[in-house]
Length: 348
View 1 (cartoon, rainbow, N blue to C red):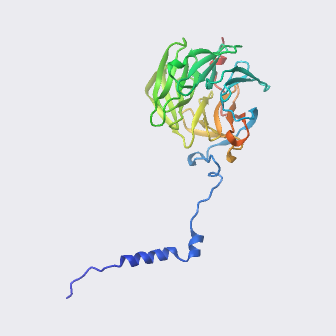
View 2 (view 1 turned 180 degrees about the vertical axis):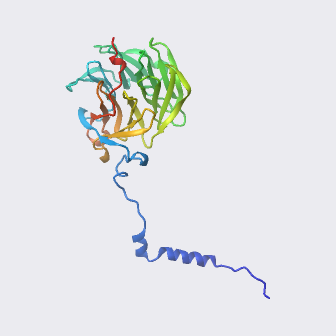
View 3 (view 1 turned 30 degrees about the vertical axis):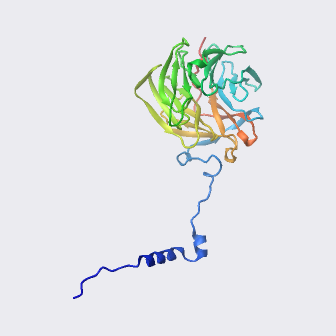
């Protein structure tokens, strides 16, 4: 009886046959080839990330044209009398816009890199200045003044991007230093005496926007170079609670900039280069978004910041159009809740 021998297969022939079957006639192969197509969610320069496509969405309306030039705008904040102040970063100016939309120049001081603004209860405007992005400062413009006095000089070594007052008159600020792989920025608190600086959180990759919850016990920070929203729970003004820090959200695409909180504790985050504001619940869950007009065609994408008008739910958003030709302006929409009570509006 002949011994069983393993059956040999002509591997080359099998592969050749399989390829021929898969290929088929040239015309059939071309017509049946799967292809990807853009749709309303994926077209344009700022498509919606998949996890955020089902969010409640509205489109803001144009409210005021600041400039025909694409000058970067920053730091909108409301004064006690209803005026809106904001930074014209490109020209080194602080602007004031009255409720009937009459604009004037409060201060012109090129080279400071003026960004985030906050108003205290005495009507003084505190200015976060990034300087040359190596050393910035915090300055203050007195009510009716036309010059800026130093609160924290450049020699302190921080690149100050934004700031927010607490109810006691101290303020938190972000240090916009570092990179994605070398996070040397952080979050700091300046006591009401304007002398004592306490670190709250270190090793942050370009700390940018900052906001406080209505009760002052939760601090929010955007990490521009790491695309993250950070939540910091506080025991007191300078002490982080046990297990009190978390990454609440990681953004897709560029890049979380400044933000504000409302009276219900919801958070509004400007997405730079995406032309939209994302809203989060008091716990950091996405709950909505506001789009800039024309963003689907690449307009008004360079959105940096916003402010809620005290006593209302009206949100005023600043952006510029880059090379799109539509200049820089302020847009308006309604948020989920009214503005939280600001330090600027406390009784004197």
